[in-house]
Length: 437
Image (cartoon, rainbow, N blue to C red; front, top):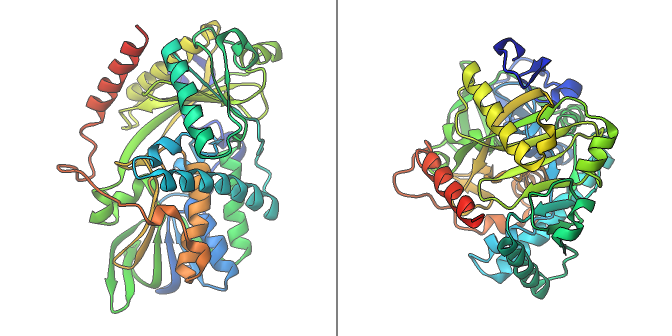
């Protein structure tokens, strides 16, 4: 990246995730691809690997097919924020209060699931429950957060609380916000280490993981399922699609329902301890209230700012990557203007899977199992729902989840290409600017 001569890059800047410095995805060198397997899992990320652990422990023969290397996609590219899902309460209310409560309850269960898996598999991945602060861009939005908190506390126990502007420097070193809300249950994780640890645990249980094994031509046949991998025909008794934002290429049904959305992240060069103490005094996970989302956090070692937001162009062209990095940096400087002279050491992007109702979904399509559509909150939910869909495949009650009961609808004129995203980002950006008037 530094060869592009952008003035805000450090001399050794790289166009790869910061997480890869400690846990770069490595190709899995399994046995030769067999013509048959009992269970085929497509995608070696959080969803697929958590499912593989459950199925392998139940005695199933499990084969995971990954188009690149295990964890190469969003599982090693995300920001590493895990939340209890309070924000999903209002989303669930689009159905009814019962759905909203169950969505939040499962969000807490998803956090516990990650905690249990990390402990059971002895994965060293910097999992720390540090809490979360969301800053309000205007006094009106701060008041809205208060009303939102009132709705939550009337429906269920909730330990979130408001922080007024006069006290926000105890949470974050910026004057941008007009107070905010703290949600203590949030955690941070090193996603690269986590997904690498999941893959190692799966292999210990006998799971075959194939890298550079893109699946195509998936279809049911005579009570089983056939597909192609590296030109070879493969048959499986059960199939799980666990590719989230990349699922649309596998089935027309998913192509019309999963919206691929780009997210870009930067990491700064190491900062002095006193600067980190001032900017992120409690080392919490952080975000702003804008509709065009920004999210940020300290690196697990507490030395850098890791900052992310939406990007529209994911082509990977050098000039585009530089422009995306500049854009994300401009968002960071609005929050932390004192970082004007700080260099960027890493920039990367990833592809997320969104849905039209902004909720994940677990379902069967012609008998093929699917879990995905995590809407940018997939570390905990992908892990949890990967385990739930595995239990569904085993036919037991532990597979029950509210996300299997929701209508998974598409929209007219959508067939996998999110032509409306630039318009949506412009529209929500306009609303954000209007809010700040």
